[in-house]
Length: 282
Image 1: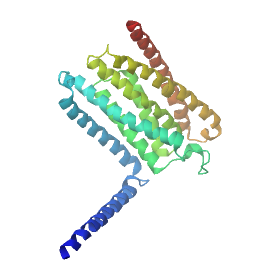
Image 2: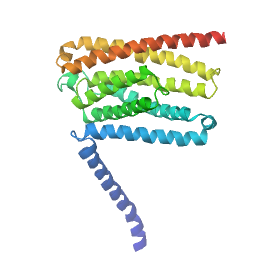
Image 3: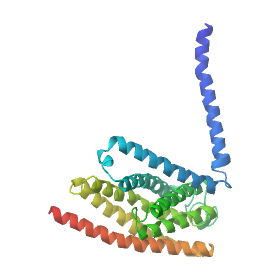
Image 4: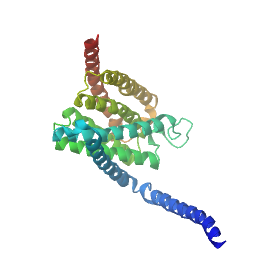
């Protein structure tokens, strides 16, 4: 009888222990990770740590499950792992940025909490910090192995992105427009997949062609049309934008403009590459 009662009491004790652990974990997150004074530091550190972890996991998995990986040179393996890292970041930040920019109530017109360009939350700030940690990590790798992982255009792109994201994270200004620009990272997985397919010797495969078409449409929407919409949104809210710090105003207009020019240049190369690929199959 006593044994049966003990067995029944065990699940209840386990549930209480789990709830206690959950409460302590939530308290830790709110007290340290998402506490306003610590967010800029913990978030960037979390981003750098996540990059290192994903890089190592990609290296481990690729060594066991991809035969092509074992035939690569040392620098190709580094780029392989680096692209795996950037793909994970791109999926994360583009999804979260889309949520904050278009679905979240944080930047909604119905939200009465202050000016649109000064709105932020602990979660949005933490997210930007994680992304800043990625850009710093990737920029460090690009500079260390320069120019094997990318030329000057990559250094400029990552430098501008890191500065803009870090400023928005620390000051809380212009986070909406930062998220709109970060949505463009949705094109990164397709670009990386193109490199993976090429490295694996599948450049003449149907998958390579399909990936090229996906890059074209993703780039058109996320890096051309969305940028046009963002500039239009800035125009509509110009009376608020001019109340930002002068450096913030320069970033709102300067960084998207510079990235927009680079996007158009790369888009031209994408169109040429897609036309060339289609011509070979017709």
